[in-house]
Amino acid sequence: MKKKYFDPNKEYAWFVRQQENIDRYRGQVVALHNRVVLGSGAGHLEALEDARRRAEAEGRTLPEQELFFFPVPNPGWFAPEFFGGTPLRGQEG
Image 1: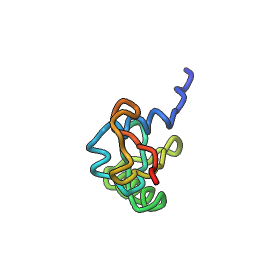
Image 2: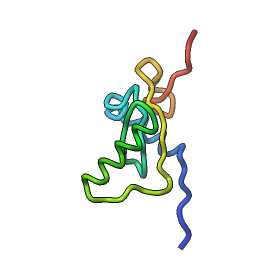
Image 3: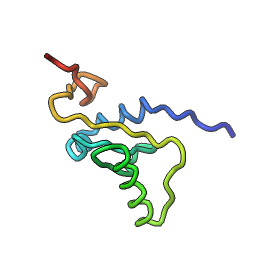
């Protein structure tokens, strides 16, 4: 069986279309896997540590591959017309 290709662009596009994700995680870095936020924090190391803590508390293992980290911008960077949802707006100024 051939493994499905992991596309971080699709993960990111899904995330930014979810207004509740933007509201909850803005200004943080998130660790995302298969459209599930596994952890978050001020930086990628904090997000990874949070994901490890959550996995341990829930009795599951953290994926070794295809764990996607990215910063969630603060309000003002998102525009509904981008991605057809609520994504990033170009920086002005």
